[in-house]
Length: 314
Ligand SMILES: [Zn+2]
Image (cartoon, rainbow, N blue to C red):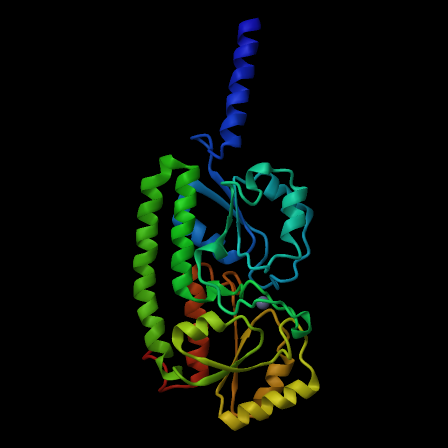
């Protein structure tokens, strides 16, 4: 009995050690927790049935200000891998969650934590943060998943990290990544064609969520409905935006569908611009289940607003 007990103890210790080293027992699915839905959708595409994915922020919630639920802590406690957008997007709610969850395997710096912003080149990084300029992100704009080419970089990084944690799945992750990138190539060409009529033209956006999309498709963001990032629209600022929209003949007010559309609607009512009210994250609308669905919805919203004739043939 003594021997069996000590053998059991050794096995338990070894299992604990395997966990501590960041590997996962062969039979178990890799438990992935993502802060938002887009990394979750990409992880499902890459991980297939080898992963179990939980996203904390819903696709129609504001990811800057999330109220952590008790279930979040439980999810992080059980996670093998936590994926964050980074660049301070989740600065108000992720750090306390990571500390409170008591799971050293997913703390920043360990194999079980991946800050996805390290995979991309951030836009709008500033040397010194000036809080009077609103809710600025000094390390760069965190809305980088809205450039599909950044989605490609995220997918590659996620595939690499899953392979590190679960070497037995290497072939499967590589095959799924290849298929993801192949679909992305086809889709990217489609989106490029559909948005070509807007290239070089000014648009208005609600929040500063769209600079990556704008850079990819050469749109010029001329004004924001928010007077400063994270600050509610004011009457005076709305009047100013109406003036800009009229002066520049702007056709599109692009907005994330979890914000209040009253100010954008006012701007549209006093100009020739149309409000494009679209999800900015996977799950922002029931039809948007994959990362590709997200851009399909955004591009369809924009081309519909531009009117028949300027979009692609149906
Ligand atoms: Zn933001």
